[in-house]
Length: 450
Image (cartoon, rainbow, N blue to C red; front, side, top):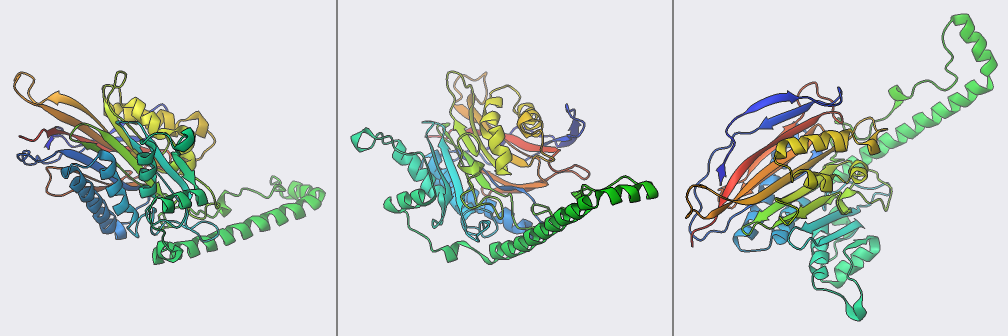
């Protein structure tokens, strides 16, 4: 893998909104050794979520991203499909107790784990997904099996095979297709249980504060006339409406609550043939309502993968993370994929995050828009155009962007000795939900010698 960009800079880019700060960072990376004879090429980019990643757990987040990259590359070097490689990466991420996916996921209001996951194959454009799934250790394995079964064609009596299943139906389908069930007690970890208890206490406190405010409002309304007289006497405006609630709000999804509330995991892959795949998996928001399904399970919202075609000069793969409701209402994965068909991938992603996400009219009433994406796009090109005998190489551009306080990523090519990891953070003074950070790089994957 040869890195193309060799500058390191940070600059503030103009935005249509004065509240949006866009930070563009181009990372310098060392060149790696040339492709070995007969060795297959490929590239993977993974994320352990867009949310808040404490410095105390940075080592664990980076380590799981590194292992996920290695699992995907092992699959690609063995000649596996891009979808199998991206699934292998996701399984590793789901198995970590530090991520909000699979084992250790956020618990819902009833103290249960319900997971969402999806996968998309850029070659066939097939899609598989599960929502609100309980009792399966690796939800992405069910999504991948749905995708594979769907590619076999119609079922008996001409029935259309499912691509998206939820709840008990998804669980039964998985077990019927040989995917083992997992006891609920194994899915919850001491980290997720501790977070659940903290969040329940916060919720109870928030509900008590709200109840007290309602009672106070009623008392003031019953004495509205007297209140107005007192206000005239003291010369202050009446607060019969109960006053501002902003200072009394109990924040469940704040950086102080280091419980992995938003860190969905995901991966994007390109194989030697230029086929791309993307996948995403999530335990959803903490204390979500039972049965709630987030972006990780929904078509065009959690992930997207599409090979180059007549109307798509680039192959693209996208995986998202963040507040599911925000990502669903903006169909962010699909929007990013479409934007990446323009010449400047960096600028295209920036404008999408600004205009189609933070500035989206569908989220106009939101105080802060929280999310992140990893993307890659690839195309075939000649390493040296002037040399006609030079074999084509795969040019891969990879980027990550987030509006949350941080996002943990890892990436690796089949020619790298080890994966590289990084926790991207908003710069000092930037406001989460109103600011955009973007980083990334470019590499060439040379075809192996025969």
